[in-house]
Length: 129
Image (spheres, one colour):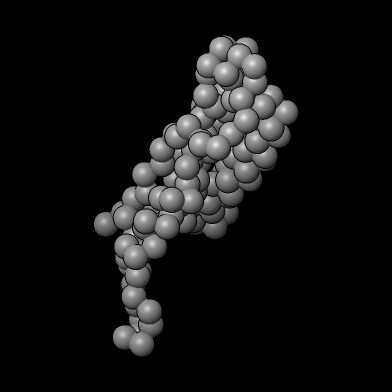
């Protein structure tokens, strides 16, 4: 039996994905002037595509479509077909800063939702007061 709902587990995975994305962005920004450095990115799309056939949930009716779910594995990759500067570096600082801002907004939204879930649990434990 799980201690927390699947919502909390999903939010936790979302925060983990955001943290991994932040690490890749920070590494790219830190190496913006490093010759021959190849920008990294976190790859979610391929992982999601691979997991599509492995999703499973509780079905309340046998007519519902079955699907399975397994913990997703995120990975950092060096993208191909990118433009390089004269030093062989593929980091675009403007794009990285935009990705960082987007990632921070996403992380804050997930964090706020997780705080709401814990507030609901706290209210339930206290008996609604």
